[in-house]
Amino acid sequence: MSIHTEPLAASQAAGPFSLCISEDQRQMLEPVRRFARERLQPLLNEAATEARRQEARQTAQQLGLASAMMSEGQGGLGIQPFELCLLLEELASGPLGLAAELTVSLPALAISRDHEWLCRLLPQDSEALLAGLRALPLAVAAPSPKPTFALLPRQAAGLLVLAPDEDRRWRLRWLDEVALRDLVLPGAEAQVSEGLRLVRLPPAGEIHGTGFSATLPAGACQSILVWQGLWLAGLLAGAARAATAFAFSYAQTRVAFQRPIIHHQAVALKLADMAIATDALRLQVWDVATRLARPDRLPAGHFAAMARQVMGASLEIHRHAVQVCGGHGYVEGFPPARRFQDARVLGLMLMELAQASAHEEAAFEEARGEAGGNRRVLV
Image (tube, rainbow, N blue to C red; front, side, top):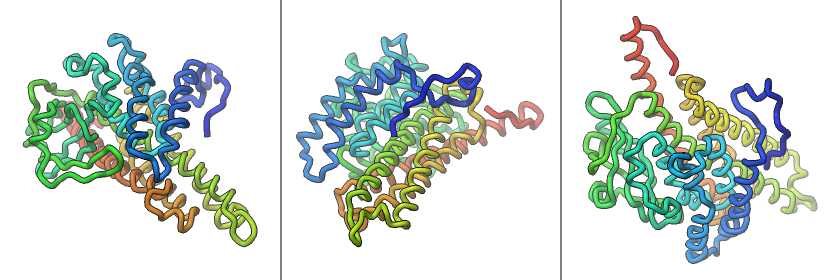
C-alpha cells in the first residue's frame, strides 16, 4: 500500500494533512523500505535465528534514523511527525516486536529537540540507541497508587519517565541504568517479544530521577504524550497494513473447494473490511501527526480519541487476519498470530497513553477555566 500521488495544489495543501509525498521524503523512505524488505521481513519466518536478528539490529545503525529524528541544531534532519509515521510503517512490515525494539528511543530523541539537558544524556554516536546496545525509552507514570507499566529493551541505558508530582504538575525525569535496575519491581517483568519486556514500575510518587529533570508546562506535556503515542500508533498502522497484505496474499494462494478462498464471498468481504479499516487507521494517525507539527491545530481530546480508535481497529484487523488464515493463523510463530500478540501489547500501552492524555487535558482545562472565568479553551 505504498503511496503514489502527485503534489497537491496550494489551496489543497492548506488542509489538515496532505497525502502528497515529496521527492525528499521518497528518498528518505527508500533505504528504510529496502532494509525492511531485505532484513526484517525474512525474520517473520519461525526459523529465524538470534544471530540474524542481531545482524538486523546492527544494520539498523546504517539507516541514520537517530540523525533524522534529531533537530538541525543537533546536526540532524529534524523530520516531522508525519515523516516519522511513514518510517515506522515501513519498519513494522517485519516482526512488530523487533521494529518496536529498534525504534524505542525515537520519542526520546524527538523530546530532546526542546530540552537541552536531555541532549547531554545522549551518546556521541546517537545511532547506538537503535542498535540494541543502548536505548533510552520513555514511560508515562500513572498517578499514585497505580503501578506504571513500561516497554523496555533488553539493554536499556536509562529511562525517561513522565510523571505527575503531588501538585499535579508533570515532570520529565531521567533514570540511569543503575537506578532503573533498582526500581524494577521483583517478579514484575514479562517477555513480550524478541527484544522487549513489559516491566512494572512503582507508582509515580516513588519514582525519582538521578540528577536531570524538568517541570513541564501543559503544552509540553501533551506534546510528549503525543510523540510517544505516535510511535506506538505508527507501528500499529504499519503492522495492520502488513497483516492485510499478508491475508490478501494467503487468500490468493490457499485453495479450498477447488478455488482460491479469496473467491469465496465471506472471505472477500472480510478482506474488504480489513482494507477499509487499515486505510482509515492510517489516515487517523497521519492526521494527528500533521496536527502535532502545528500545536494550535490539535484540539483537546483529539489524540486520545485517535488512540482509542487505532487500538480497537488494530486488534480487529489482526483478528480478521488470523481468521482468514484459518488453522495456520493460530500457529504460534506464524505471522498472523505473532503480529496479533505484539499488536495487543502495543495497543494496551497506547490506551494507557490515551487515558493519561485525557486526564492531563481535563486538569489543564479545569485550571484554565478557573483562571479565565470558567471559560473552556482548546489547547
